[in-house]
Image 1: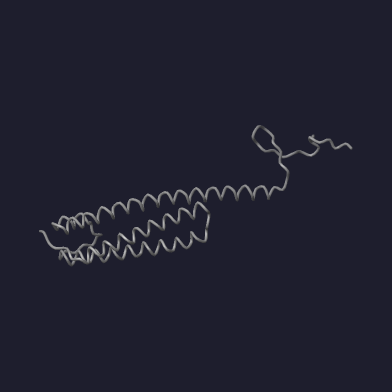
Image 2: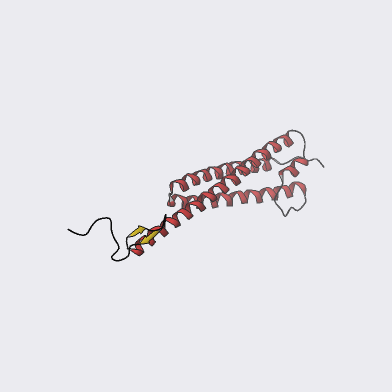
Length: 168
């Protein structure tokens, strides 16, 4: 069954494209903030990302409702633009396919950037934890350490010879 797609659907998809592009830009800012260890900026970006994802979810829901109205069939799941394109023909189908390709490419970029950022954050956390551990362990011992066996630290024993003679 071929039918006309309401222009509101195209407008919603354009808004989703715009919001997705903005989300990708936020992820790029996040990566720069992680590399530079700007924690206050990361907190603000995290909030902005959550808001952006919420907006995209709202657009998805509006799109689902519009498709339900257009088809007259309930659609409890998210709309698949490829299914919607199969229901139409001509310029509307071409426009829908172009929007779908752009959205798929943006979503893939977002997913890839999210994975990269997650790895950056995990690596940074691990390095910071190791640095804190080294600092706190060194401060806790407050004793001079010398090299013992190759590559290992050992504690100097009382009365052990030193490099500088104590005789004056």
